[in-house]
Length: 316
Image 1 (cartoon, helix red, strand yellow):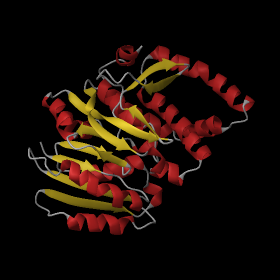
Image 2 (cartoon, rainbow, N blue to C red; image 1 turned 90 degrees about the vertical axis):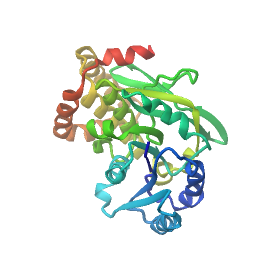
Image 3 (cartoon, rainbow, N blue to C red; image 1 turned 30 degrees about the vertical axis):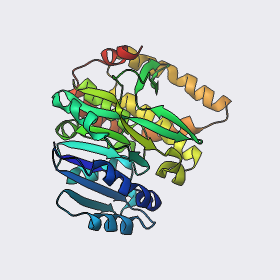
Image 4 (cartoon, rainbow, N blue to C red; image 1 turned 45 degrees about the horizontal axis):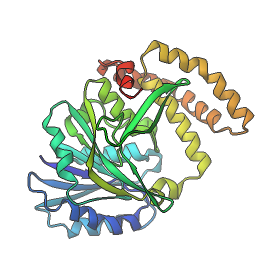
């Protein structure tokens, strides 16, 4: 299989200098197809372009090819948009997404790719050795349930291989299905919930997502672009907005939608009582985008063949 490794970047020159050689070392011995490393840059203001250019020039261009594409318009920025620009350049059958703060272990690639022998498999996620407050927390398998009008998600038992979603910070995806279901939705820009949305709409279209614990990566969360460039209130209002987007785009079960509407007053009251207005701001931001959401919803629902309850019943 030919592999396209996509490493989206925003102001990550230090991470790229440190981690790109390690990524290269982890994949350089792959012999079952071609490898290309694509580094789309999202209007960085640091020295990222120079670092990316130097890395690409250091490749031989035969066994491993390097590519980049640069966004110069911040209004068109965000994680989904940046990844999709990279995918537009990709020639591989498998898309491997790695954040710039992620370093794969040697030997991580083969267990991932083994799953793609089955045509129904869309995505396979890695075991994420997440560095958090100086400790290693193992992540990678997500579960979820419908609760108080929203999809709530959490870390699942790592001894199982089913998963609600595959992280776009360290996961592999079949390119043909990615394009068929529309890829990452740019409505979630600048970040969060886009990978849950991607896996969920793939499952509603009848495809499978899997967690592979033998494929291990190291993930230095605190050094990533979000923690380094965004203040907590801005992050939280985006999270709430995107939680709403997810429901409005994907959920078709009438009982879930009814409960979503009935629970909204609770969240409005809670945010006022706690003097924390991130939810109200997030709701406003979602509401003004409602025409776009409804247009996108029609596209997603046309591809859906599996019910919300069938998907979520695996984890409750």
